[in-house]
Length: 78
Image (cartoon, rainbow, N blue to C red):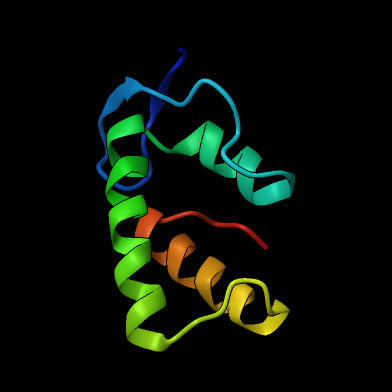
């Protein structure tokens, strides 16, 4: 487990062992998010999905979820 400078909490700490998803989001999370903040997002993501009634299997809803994730984790993914 590599140590990362977390964009969300601003501390250096243990990161994830592998990207949690494929593509640019997974790489950004791996490089810029500590394991503790990722765990916090996993809890928050359930609340976001339920609150906005998102269906992640639908591309538009999935993009909305990724937008919320990027804001929560303070990622700059374009």
